[in-house]
Image 1 (cartoon, helix red, strand yellow):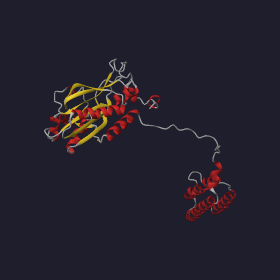
Image 2: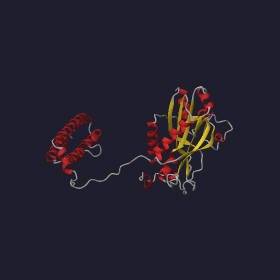
Image 3: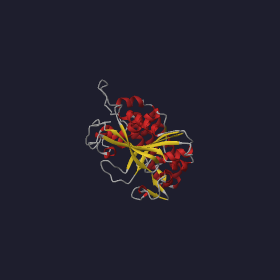
Image 4: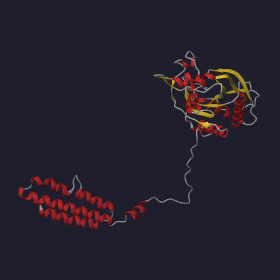
Length: 339
């Protein structure tokens, strides 16, 4: 067996001396030191079958040879310039050819609208505030002066989660949270997602985006509300836009109004978008109800304020002439790439 080990040693030296590449060295390594079928390991496996007086010396010699061959292999590998060899295998290419065009991504049209509205109100010194989408019934209804028998509190009008938790149906909840933490003066808008179990059609979705606004201070009047919303409408839709206020009702504002703008598509002449009326409803607003101030600990005799709310999808559809809200959520690049 000792003679066999000597032959293997000499043969391994010869094989490594002839090796001309790292690949050939790896082949030699597998041949002599491989776990399955390697020459050295085959000898070690055969040791138990040898006479007892040969087992110890053979095992010791086999391990010494195994370590020697391993050292020779590493030394042989170090003799090759691997970086130069790798560079020779790189594919050649024509540097004079134009590169492959990669299309740039961009913001979703709804995100663009939200950013634009935020920019308008930042210029009017309004803060941007955010709140949780999973809300408590108190913030979504009670603190906003919405009575227990109001239709919006029914199971078919709100996503209830149990334990008086729900998916918020309006971002007015953020107004309450901000007023609980801060004292007037307050100027803020609250953009975010809201959830209502509406039947999905061309104008409705069970999840959509809303921006609520609030201003509270001493001496805030309805004329301030009209001024701020007029500046917003002219900034977003254009300077030639016209507005009108129609009396309405919201539990958390009194007096309340629905705000219409002249149709930006037909310029007030009448079209299918505005139902031939020349006007399109864009948001609701009003003076904050004193009961809301009482809920957050404000003195309604000292402070007044106004609030408003608008749907981001509706504003985007009006500005760009989009006739189906579902297009915003289908991720069709043919639609999204137009913005």
